[in-house]
Image (cartoon, rainbow, N blue to C red; front, side):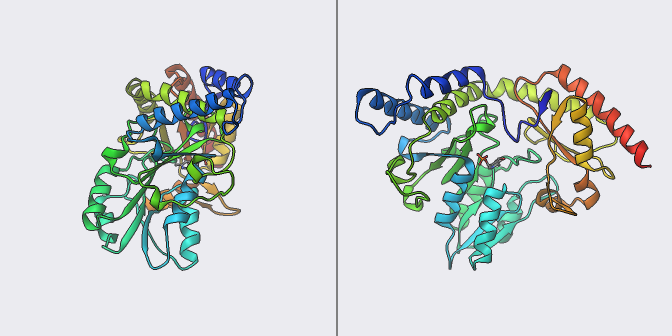
Length: 373
Ligand code: PLP
């Protein structure tokens, strides 16, 4: 099977798996214990924290909290920060771990407004200016969209927002960006930045949150006081060490990988026939969304699986009607939404694999269209 659904999760790299094994066997100690080996493990966690915060462009290890996943990091920020009598702006294209929390807060009487996307799938400066008022004190806009790969110009959006209210707190979900494009939280100007291990070849079950100023944050979990009291629970040591190693591998190869992904992305963009290319050419090249209007994405997915290729569909399926906040906001109709598939590469995906994928996809869609006619 050729796995082309890397935006949903990624395979743990062999050198990362070695670290996982080491910290689950030889060095399995609880970092809070008082003997020397446990102290060694706690020092290793702090080294990992130092490395990751540097890779994110942050200043101090106090600015990074390890969590169990990006969903936890996002919930932690929104639940602590979005408050009654204050106004928050959330992009309509956010992952459910932001959107659903925001929506829940809104239905509980919080003043949350959703920012629309343009046809390329990004929040524009104009849209932000339309909604931004001096009483807005929280904003959440993702860096790279998980369905389309659209890249928001976070630096510019932060500047505009802070120009209107210099105290506004800006959260950015960087799950699909970290390790794939360079990230510098200071340059971006964000107050919170979320990352996740399993999107960059570390295992599932580890994430982190950059926190510029901890006065804004409140723990979701109380207990043993780990992570400076911000996130109790025995640390996922092997996960944290894996996140360090995997992010090092990805960050050290950002430019090279990016260029290779561009080649794969262009090949798909140019050679798949009878489709609408949803992802704009400035999107992250690791992810491309295509739509086959009049076809059902699930059928294409299953037909491609039979041919040995695993791909994703961008939209969550309700019982009758497929819904997709991103594509709806981008102005696409139901026919496009129903036929939208997502192809996402890893740095080791080869052009040969993509050539054979495209050949099969074209055949499958042709066969499908002939059947339904
Ligand atoms: N944010 C984005 C943009 C994502 O793509 C995902 C996963 O699909 C998440 C958050 C949630 O990540 P996790 O599985 O680590 O909770």
